[in-house]
Image 1 (cartoon, rainbow, N blue to C red):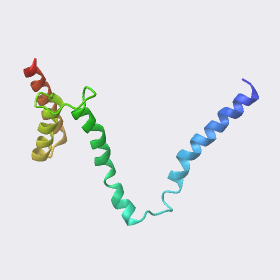
Image 2 (cartoon, rainbow, N blue to C red):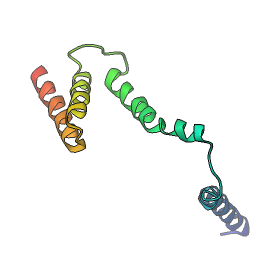
Image 3 (tube, one colour):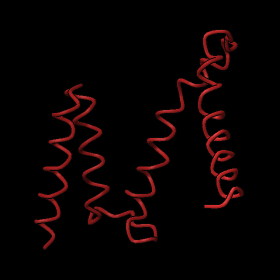
Image 4 (cartoon, rainbow, N blue to C red):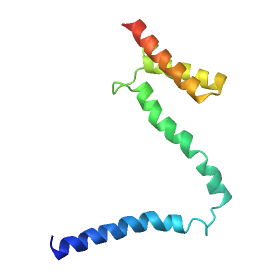
Length: 107
């Protein structure tokens, strides 16, 4: 390898290390405003909705709002199971069972 390649690799190492290390190093010294902390509590549910809604309502790339949509039926059953059981493993198992059972009924 040439000297220029080594400089390029070391430069990439420094940039990658810097942007990952310094936020953690300064995390204990700075505080966020209470409004920002309250707003950050909504990030996980927002990300979950942003991932699941297109997968449930647009499984083929177009809207499928019908009771023949196994993704939609399973999502509704899973939501109800989560509310009633408050148990993550049971909710996942019930959702998978609902999806595969409904899909088998459609065939």
